[in-house]
Image (cartoon, rainbow, N blue to C red):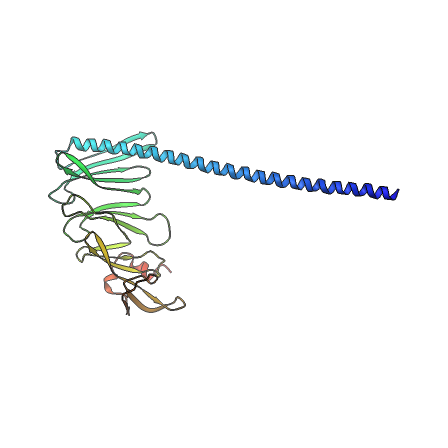
Length: 295
């Protein structure tokens, strides 16, 4: 009788064990299934969101193209005039307004007028420059910037050749450190077309010397100064200036002048100086280089 009872008890325990095991296994299956469903749902949402953004961006791009064509039509109607200007708002939809400025003038020289069309909306600033060839306009420059980074643009002789150039100034919206950027378009000798964009970080231009000095990207007190010289439609490196450091990363009090930055290869010269050359001490961002006021 006792044997029978022990046998029945054993069967009951095994039943409970397998039942619990099956329950736990079912729970695990349900959890995995639930996680898989959630992951798939999240991916679907991300794809839908990306698709919606792409669709909107495409629609905005097409709308901006239509606005440009309309502005160019207005300019063409006034092509006999060397100087004229018109500003207006183009309404694309209830929430999308584009500010348009159409200007023609001798912006870059006395011999050749240029047409400038600026469009600005919720996403960015779009600048198109045209030269006038007989009775038609030819686009010679196009530039766009995000609305949150655009600071402005200037027309000035930037390389010291006596001709006015086009410069767009922005400030980076992401990343650490000093990050003022300038995109330079040099006017060509024919005073009609422009060079490709030449980009500088934290620059101070000196057209009289045909030089550009500036501060490289990096933390205050731990980055380099640079000096470039203009060479045709490009630049050559003159030198980089930075603090010498020992094996522990501590500044030694010596200033290094080299043709490369401390972490670059191809060094051709290296000079050890007691102080930073005076020519750098008046450039914009010099305090960032020294780190004074940023400790």
